[in-house]
Structure formats: structure tokens, C-alpha cells
Length: 393
Image (cartoon, rainbow, N blue to C red; front, side, top):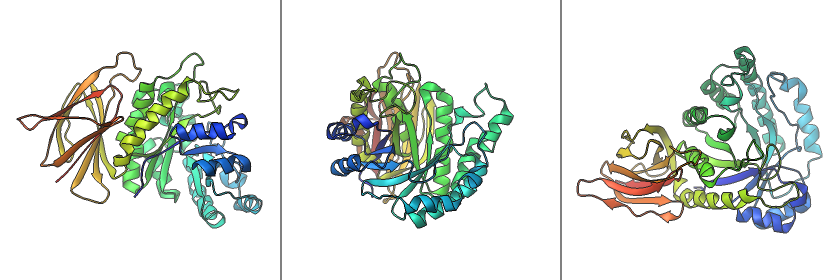
């Protein structure tokens, strides 16, 4: 059983690979860096502080692009090319994974399946890392006609896209990125719903890439904007969360500025990651069964928690223990104020279906609740925060 949910970030620039910066990264609650180079001195420090590295450039890379690369992976990166890279690979204990591609079309997924099998042969202790398109980047983008969008992913429906990945690529997870503050709320929750379904259907972990940075240089996301992304993803069953970016890969206001100084986003993310990990200690003992979005306080029924209400828009993940069929949980995020304009404290109300040992875990630890004479439980929860409610029969 995992001890906690894992949290990562993209990229670490060269002027921030000294011991002080790497210790700060670990102190921020980050467990791994994606897109790292095979930099021995930095990796030695990663090992010292317990950070993992998912390395780019150790094998041929790939990006699906805007349709122009679809279906070309086999010709561009033959299996012999992976063997050539493997022959000159320099291993290190901190390297836990190797980047093999980003945003592939369905047309390339069967060959990625062959690549993964070859990777298992060449690098038996390194997990190949492959990340998928977000929904807003393709057919939901009205600036691009449907024919081009369909060509970009190879199918016209994202549920089918995620399913085809699971059928074709023998990896234990499904990873995709979605930057809600550069797209839209509706397609964020839609993508999470499609990905969560695929992970349940095909027994995959759900890995989600979120944003701590911003597309506009004069905008910095607030703590509650980070919370909304993380706890909504967890309500859909996320097993791993990755933040874009630690240092400049794209956009603005990353954790580090180009001179290697921590920005205001560092302390925000440090607090949010700490909350993720506090809830995560119990959260990882459960798996997602379903997720419901409640509107206007309409009651929601989970498997063992009934008449759940809170706020005008709440995301509620229905969960069951991974080891005990009589233990249940729900992950709640009041998500009515995703732009953090007017946060408030909501009253969460629920009943149980014969559960005992009720506990509510929030980002700061145990949240006290009240049990009323009519059998209803209530507790306070702030906008965009997360709470895990657990109980057993």
C-alpha cells in the first residue's frame, strides 16, 4: 500500500540545481521532477533528498503537435533508435522514469505499445512516461475546424481517446494535462470524468498535470485556485499530481524565475501540497468508484454516505477501501468559486448508511463535526478546500 499521494513538477533549470534549491523543492512537498536532464551532480542531490527524476533525452522524444505529426512515430523513432540510446544511457539511482512522449494521436498509440515493451526490455527498472492531450486542445477549441481536431487525436471523443490508450499502451497509469485557468471549467471536469472512467474500466492509476503557473504574465494564481485543481482531481481519483512548472517550460509565474529566485507561487504551492499530503495519507487507502457534481445544494447519494449537500457547486468523489470492502470514503471540494472572488465557509451535511467511526480529514488535519439528533452530520469547509470523510460498517 502506498504511503501517500505523489506530487511532482515539470522542469528544473540549470541555475537551480544546487543543494539549497533542491532541498527547497523537497520542502515544497514535491516528490519528483519531470523533464530533468541526466545531470549527475544534480541527481546525486536528488538522491540525498529523496527526489525522483523522470528524465528527458535518454530515449527518443515525441510530441503529437497539432496534427502534423500524427501517425508518424513508427517511421520517426524505429525500435532500433531506442536500442542506440540505451547503449549510451548513464544510469543513476535517482532516475525513476524516462520520458517517451507527449500528446500522441490514437494513430500512434499501438506503436507506443511496442515502444513500452521495448523499454521494459532495455530499462527494466525505469517507468516510461507518456502524457496525453487535454480536451480543450482539440475538438473543443472553436478556433480549429473539426476535421483538423479529429486528426489531432485520431478519434472524435475523449472517452474513446483515453480508452484506446488503455487498450494499446501497457502502462499502469493514464496521465494527461489540463490547465483549467487557460481553458474552461466545464472541459476540465469533463476530461477528469472521462479519464476517471477509463482508469476504473481498465485498472489504471490516474495522473493529472495541473498548473501553478499562468498564461498571462500579470496573473498569479491564488492558493484557492491551486486547491480547486488539486482537490477536484482527487475527487475524480487522482493518484499522482504534477504541477507545471517548477521552472520555465512554458508560460509565466512558475515557482522559479529565470534568475533562480523563488516566486510568490512557491509558498502558495508549499501550503497546498502540505494539505494534499495530509489528506493523502488516508486518501491513498481508497479507490474512486464514481464522482458526482452537485449543483445548487441538491443532495447527492454516495455508496455509504447519503443526502450529501454543500454550496452551489461541489465535486464529490465516492470511494471504497482498497483492502476492506466495509470501509468507505468521500472526497468533497466546494467548487463554486474557482476564481477565488468571494470565498466563504460552507456547511457540509450528510447522513450515513450504517457507518461507524466517522472521521473528517482536511488540509490542516482532523475537522470536528457535529452529529445531530436526526442522524445528520455537519462540518465546516471553505471554498475550494478538500475534505476526506471516512467510515466503516
